[in-house]
Amino acid sequence: MPRPPRIQFAGANYHIVTRGDGRRKLFHDDGHYERFTDGLRQEAERSGWIVLAYCWMPNHVHALIQTPEPNLARGMQHWLSGYANWYAKRNQRTGHLYQGRYKAFLVEDAGYYWTLSRYIHLNPCVGGRPLATNPESWPHSSMPGYARRSKRVDWVQYDQLHAYWNAAVGGKDAAGAYRRYVNEGLVDPEDPFKQQLREWVFGSEDFLLRMIALAAGGDRHRQESTIRRVRGVTVTEVLEATALHHGVDRLQYAAFRSEAPGRDMAAWLCRRWTGATLRELGPAFGLTGTDSVSNLVRRAQQQFKGSASWRKRASEIEALLHLNTEHKT
Image 1: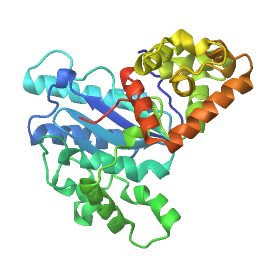
Image 2: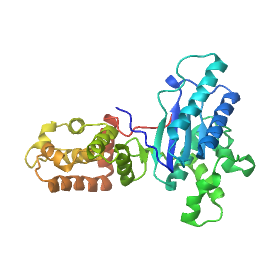
Image 3: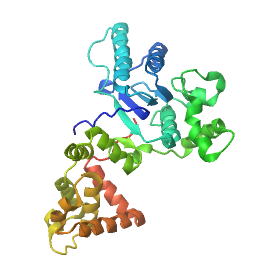
Image 4: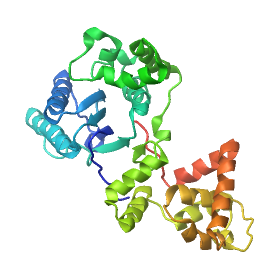
């Protein structure tokens, strides 16, 4: 799948993820962790970034940052390259340190800060072999500063992460509420990647479309091309996967007044993932008017909301197509 576009604009929020090449370790001792952390501190000061949360794991890292200026790419290149060069000299190693380019998931607004930062801070406490029993005991993250004021550093914006909660709830102890919220995740974890849109953004459909338009620079044809690139699957692929899952031939969906199993689900998945217009989808479902296609998708959406088994089958088809399958490791 082609890379999603890298969007930069003033005030953008990003969930940053990068991994060691071939699951190779990025950090071998405290000195490595400290050098990487100091690199982020220096870059935050140089580029004016607002650092909200971070967590360094042995072979991958997470950070939640805001860029008041559209300078993410330049700052990331400086930060990651600086550490890679230092790492190579210290360990007398050659070759790529990182697995491809970093991922930068756009975050719509501060309403996502708590969910994403909790996910970030809980990383050491999950998986088959947890590295910590509770998030505040893992020293290579911003969580100790959220747990205890004595552990705070002046370049992480703890209060800004709490500002949305204060405005929405009006409570007096955002710090205490956040600590409880994070620790509740140990018992009842929530994976924000399940709400992630198109493996690209955390936010609403409207936000996704606005980012696509920004990436395409206002050109309609480029916008449509970008939509297809982001969603990364064709109508034919969706039809074939859905028909296979329901034990029918995909051409049955195009028959007049077809009642082939999975037809509505195929239409819903096409709208969800391919970027095809209603008019473009019509022939695949034996329909000539956009209203008819819209009604088919609307009925499917009602089934999605009302039937757990329907949602399960749709999810299985998405997994078969390798859609929306980003998870922490």
